[in-house]
Image (tube, rainbow over all chains, first blue to last red; front, top):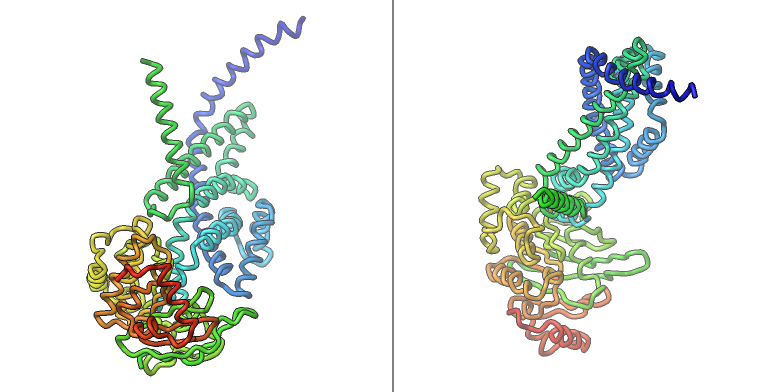
Length: 265
Length: 249
């Protein structure tokens, strides 16, 4: 009896604190947003690093012959199998042992960048290998060297075919940037931690705010990649079925809009 | 001699595809290679420009030995056009881009000059209005004409055609053959693997009949059609003329 009479007021007060919490979170929002800029910097750094090394790894795997191809496969195997956090710690605590100073940011960028390169290499390898062999034959038959053929014919096509895969990789690594929390620089999650360490009651709202930041970033990133895909679109050079799906989803959303409009009439 | 092929052998595993093929071509000649499928006609073409390395035998383009280990193969290939059965146009380039890329990348021509040249070659195959179309937007016949223009833009000494009309719908074969006939009449040196007997009769200086990796018989079309020495040649020619008709003159 006593318990149930207490339950109603306590629920009320919980709702009250949630509203209060949001108000109390406001002063920390600028520093959280500033910290998320560091995540974006880290993201750009690791994606770029991953792109360069991923392309290289893919090229070596496909065209590198036995020795270089094996080196590339071992590289890819290592960075795809070691857990991200373990990599992060290795890159952060490892270099100082050899007298090389490394910042948390640099350690995170290299660890996550190399890791991403291993994944990106497989996106790219798939794209390269899906290009018909006749393209290489035609290029060689007109007197192009292998290198010329790779750079003028194969890569421009493979690049276009790998955009959908990259969109996926982007959505994945953007969240990995919070792992940098573990090597102690003030990215967004660590900043959130500092907030709720001192204001324990804000823990839920600050974490939800961080979640919202990443939801927005992912949405923006996907829109950007969609734009890149449209910008470089060439008839006959898209991932099979990709265009179709997009087309049909648009039609169905249109019909939903129509249905709604008819409903309101 | 513009092209000399001497005793070419090629084997895939236990399968002997070419067993000593020799012939020559003078400048301006058109020769047609015929024969049942699987007799090494396409392999022979690829051995000539070393897209497929021959196991044995030698090939010369004028004074230069293509098969020599130290031959600068890219420079030689730039002088030999190759037209594929499946066109193999570069999918990311427009018709113009496809024709222009050889002069641009292989010959190091300036972009303006290469564009002008490419437009002229597209005009020559009747496709200047399709310059901005991508391969996927063209019909098979149009794609094959672009690929011929692509070969022409390199000013080749010789063009190899590997069954250029075999992948085309019947109604599209004519437009490609028309371009090839006019090339032959302009004096282009052409070596053509085809089943189009109408084309062979109209412009071939010689027909080479191959079977089981060797040349069975070669001669002028008239003589081959009316008076083949080997019974097998006559039999094959009759059968193929029946199958493909001779409407394409």
